[in-house]
Length: 315
Image (cartoon, rainbow, N blue to C red; front, top):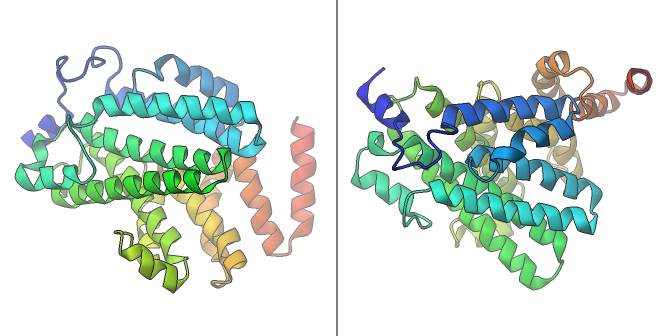
């Protein structure tokens, strides 16, 4: 391993107060365990694993808030929304502590241009990703919590900030390729950039051309093929966020294409993406949901009925 990789992974106690308690790789590994629990329908166990470190570790904070945001989005209960909003604010505060000092939107890319990439700390790079993801979650909750113009503007600003952070992270990724690409920390960072850039490009490309031209004036851009390529690369990787790439592609192929009339979804690709997770999480509600959706689109209604019966018997 080169010196640059060593520098990327280095973190002194002065730089990170939590270094002696929870290092970056360990936090990612624990979040991966929590993700497996979540995909096995063990939501409470996942929350219990993440909560103790949710105010000291950026990944625990992100994972803990993500589950509560998911719960709020599914129930639309006022208490769930309030709890999720409080948690996401705490998660943003936690992530902020690990970001580059005096970091502002757009500063990360300029920072890279002024100094070598290997001098950037891994925690600062990952903190940008976690902060961007938390901003997106807060934006979504803002839209759900209060449907007025002020909330819409606030949510839009958060989305704009998140998008800019992802673009800066992509610049870091492109600059550091070949320098520290063999480290696990770098691979996790790469997976996070791919899901963010890929999702934004795909989402923006689905907007009407007139609206997209307006958004380009404030820095947004959307390329569908590029977005799909980024998500596909992220889906075949082994990062924590690989499942997010898979779920985004499944959503696109099984719902978005049909609802927006942009063409028929690629069910062959959807089945190939889902197959390994069906073997790993045969009773996972999220996995079974997409399995049933693909069966419906193929007209295999008997498969859906058998799947529902099996799910009832397993309970």
